[in-house]
Length: 387
Ligand SMILES: *Cc1c(COP(=O)(O)O)cnc(C)c1O
Image 1: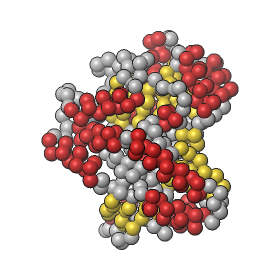
Image 2: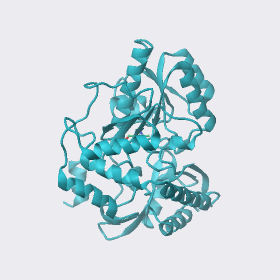
Image 3: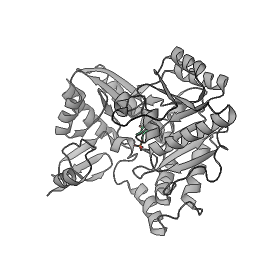
Image 4: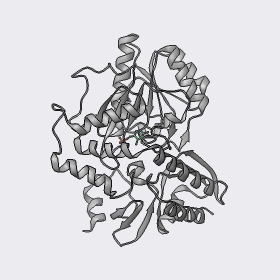
């Protein structure tokens, strides 16, 4: 049996895969089993920050791998401590919990928010407001937090304590906070899986106004928007005068190795005490070494390049034939197309460009290191296919 047949027979049937096996890559260029080349506009779903096989990142990761690969959290290791310092210095947050995925980073945030509400305000203050069309993960708690019924089907009762209100509806949010015993509001600055929909400035300001008034924990789910994706280190930095109490992130953090992080600010930094939370693999030194390399390279210059690339794509696609709207922030771009999104993706793949979808939209999440030349080629193909 070939790889596709083996996978079909022996891998659990949870993914609808494209009929492509990736065998190698460099930067934003991928090669399949037949030797066909693609421009990658998905980056493993916003994970491969510097694309495939980035030399500097490989150097950082393999140097650590050759020293030791894991110690458990019973011992100190340098990459983990260094990474936490970098994240805190770049954000003003106070400390960090490391895990292995976005869902786990959010689990950690959810537990912390509940502890805060229950201890500070009373036993019933465990409710967390999340937004309709949000996506927070696939574990039972993060699934319950996710404001999309389609993900809840088949899995029995959801975990209690999540209230979903419509994104960008200040009145509904105000009402939900006033009428329930709430400990936190959790949001994505740009709803990724929900269709690349940014929150409005007014709505984000309202979240923080209500959090102040009712003493709530604000949780920015930056699993997809984080680590340079929107042209800032974290997407909340695109909004004026807000600092979340908790920032969760994962996807692009270690540029392709599994790593989640939950960053705690002043208000939340002392919630966890020894024994309250943990992870066997969390803070793995090899992954942390990869993340140290990522964060150190997301300089202001690099981030302004990301914004310039995003501007170019947006300008090139806005108003193009067959493209109804362009949404998003930085290199997180959603296209509402006249053709069905799946059709656009299939035709682009045929022509050597790999795209993603999000709900009914075409979604672009290229490696942040993609070159202008690659962008130009990909944009031409997208325009041809959409027209
Ligand atoms: C992908 C994603 C998650 C889940 O991350 P996993 O690593 O798949 O667990 C959570 N929140 C957001 C916003 C995401 O985009």
